[in-house]
Length: 259
Image 1 (cartoon, rainbow, N blue to C red):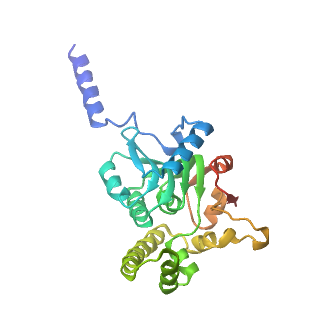
Image 2 (image 1 turned 90 degrees about the horizontal axis):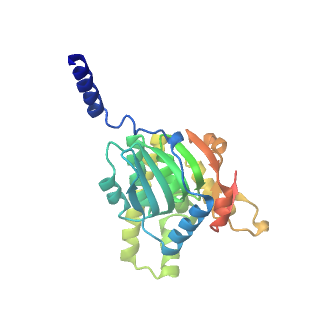
Image 3 (image 1 turned 45 degrees about the vertical axis):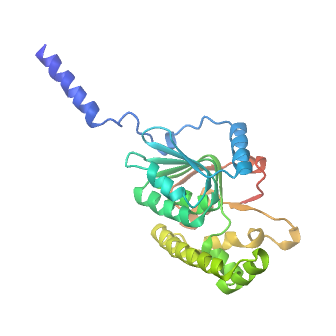
């Protein structure tokens, strides 16, 4: 009777000491319960509503982010993240670069696995996906089309950008100066982020080019480059598994080049 009691006490102590043992899940073991049709409808709804991203706690170890990255997304991320989270599942259509790179730096620091279930395009690809310790395309699309540095290079610097934005959007000098300051801070953080990951800016310069480098005679406008895991590795993007879901991209109206 005494022996049994001691064993029971020992088991209770083990369970309380290691409460997450049974729940801990690797990225490769994460199961998506969404069909292609489910994902298509969900993404089309997000696009139509231009919904700011929402965080949902799936369980103790998994946090999910769906929607667009907006200026408040980083502060919302900090409210929802904690040391128990090991995995971030994303279905994100891009958005605010400053908030995105701030999230990316923290994801990288925490060594979270990132799983794409749906879309990870634009800022979501540049910062959230690339920050992952393990980067897993479970049932989705990862699409690139440049970054803050590549865009500035393409337009020829801030002075040319200022002229273009004043002509196109009637932007005041005061507003542009605020925008410029924000972009300079974003670029500073972006450089820090890619230096930590050892990913060359060349990759983003390539994906920023019109038609992703294809001949203009084709008269096709493409939204994103979808690189394979093999292509990503050429640019030092490591620990990528899974395949690009090209039919999903087509179903939600995104024109892509697969490389």
